Amino acid sequence: MGRNKNAILVALLFVLPLPGKILAAPLDGSAGLGNAQLAETVCVPPGAPPFSSWQAKRTEPVVLIDEHGRPVAGLFVAYDARGQRLHAIWVGSLLASVDVAPDDKTAPAWYDRGVSAVSTAVRADPKQTCLWYRPPPKAKDADT
Image 1 (tube, rainbow, N blue to C red):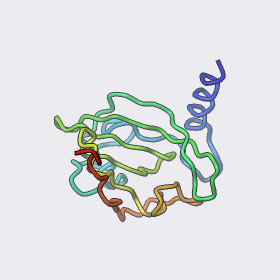
Image 2: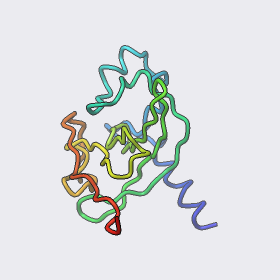
Image 3: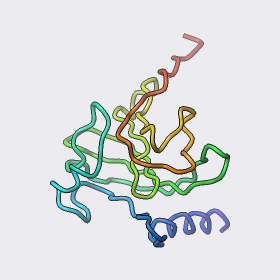
Image 4: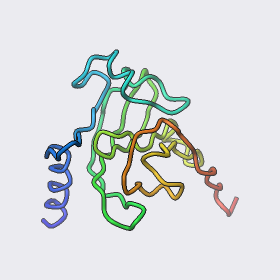
């Protein structure tokens, strides 16, 4: 029961208004705004199709850690975009990370430098910058 309460609390954080902040993540390219407006407001990393083509398939609230070690509400979304699978993490209305190849465990996800620190922790005062980076690729199994 405790885990369900936490999930509900995290989910509520995405709909409660805060002064000057938009907390609702646009789930897919057809949600809320017109596609042309979304294309201008949601910046995607290299290798990702335009956000207007993203269709949400599954969502899950997650708890992230900021660069000071504090918990931050996040939302994991699995997308299909023109037949390409994508995984994304949103922090409120900010696209924090995108995995353009979720089936390739050695290919790292992309992170927006304004939302994620180099350690991939959420910044204390995140801002969308559209400056995407990838940490070094994960090593393949050490046994092979």
